[in-house]
Image (cartoon, rainbow, N blue to C red; front, side):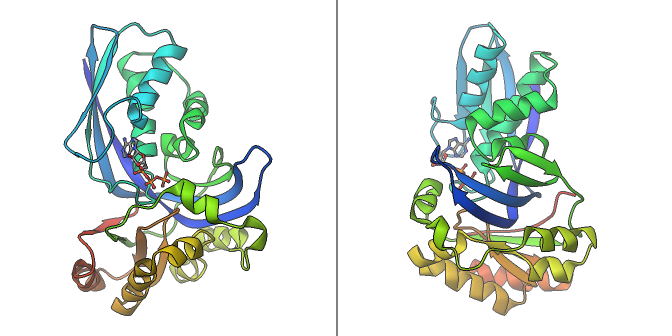
Length: 284
Ligand code: ATP
């Protein structure tokens, strides 16, 4: 038996850090949504008690460091599954990009193995399992658009933002999320983006206000380390994107664009800047 799952990338329309907690995690407030750029995860049952991971992408770990491996191990241990699984990851989402590629693979593995092994695990329980694997995994289990609070595991589904084009551009640098959070001085953030204002913009389906109210407190940290990310933002705005923001801890920058006629020009302009450029739609 075989199952197939799509693992879409996420972007943060808003990312705020409220404070650093005593357990070392940051208390966050994020508005996340999915875009139509996805890895494909194929899961095939094995009679032996083993987990095998393969991928065409040569630059991700294929052992127990892979988040899909960890998801499979967690399900097997928790539900006492004796069968094994062969997992193939067809990677399309750039790695260490701020697009939650690994987290989405883990979430898709949880969903897929729940089906493959007919475990009947309710979605809420899959989200809790996801929280054990990483802060972005619970959101990736259900996807859609949501406000995430706590360290990312407290989810409140909301309406999707107005449909638009999303141009994603990742400069050729890898950014470690832990490093960016490590450099953030949560008590010294000058300007917090307003979650309420963004929620209102989404509720009103006002594309102009969504663009105006984009905000990410991690952006300045990454921009200070990598000036090329700042240049990329400026370039995207110059080319005509309606709203531009870095996603997660970066370095991917996304541009929201309402008019299809502008997409090719922005896409082609960015290709001169970096190799990883995608023009996709929101997954609404
Ligand atoms: P986030 O936005 O959640 O911080 P990210 O997009 O910045 O995530 P990932 O692509 O998830 O980053 O990769 C982060 C690290 O996780 C990489 O160093 C990579 O080696 C490792 N990793 C483990 N499993 C996977 C996977 N299935 N796909 C991609 N990277 C993985």
